[in-house]
Image: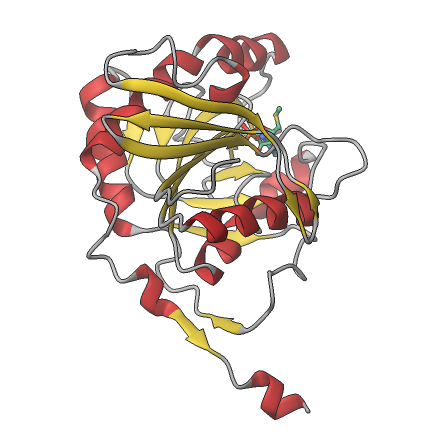
Length: 273
Ligand SMILES: CSC[C@H]1O[C@H](OP(=O)(O)O)[C@H](O)[C@@H]1O
């Protein structure tokens, strides 16, 4: 792979990248520079990347949540972020489908969460563990603000500009009792934000995501249909791709948000030696 400097990356979920993201959405100004780009990293061979030029801005895309057999989430994310660091990625946009834990949220609502609760079992990851990661404003306020505006411009449905994302280990969804426990603490539930948010901070990159509600958590309403979830995942991909592309076009590679300053060189090694 041509490891030239690339400042933007998109981590796609089941929605966008199962399609042909971002081609076929708006081909003007978009050039495919490479595909099937799998890289050997210290953590194993990475998933396949695609590299695009969007109005001259290089954008690396990957689909992280494909559950490659035999590869743990911790390793998959380290592979991806190791590559991001090599090529100087500074701004990462993620997207994914989520369940609603808040009765005010319905399928086909967009939400741009401002915070998260990590209930996953993917704690002990990291590239070298050299930094103390301060998780204040972990979801980049600047990218979030651009995503909120961009959804409003492109979508006639509802968009929620704040919310808390509870990250579960999966692969199952939650029981009614688990959803009841989360109510009042989290608005949405998914499996796709940690450990990416930690790794983004570790490499000094901004990270924020755009999430589409694809189901109700158990017990939030009486019943929901699995068919609707599948329909949403497969039919709304072009819309999500369109929003992400438009957001990238508005963002500059260097933010004024200060995300990278929240990574502190740690003295833990000294303390524990
Ligand atoms: C296929 S539903 C479960 C899966 O969907 C979400 O991920 P993504 O859309 O990012 O692939 C959710 O977080 C779960 O991992």
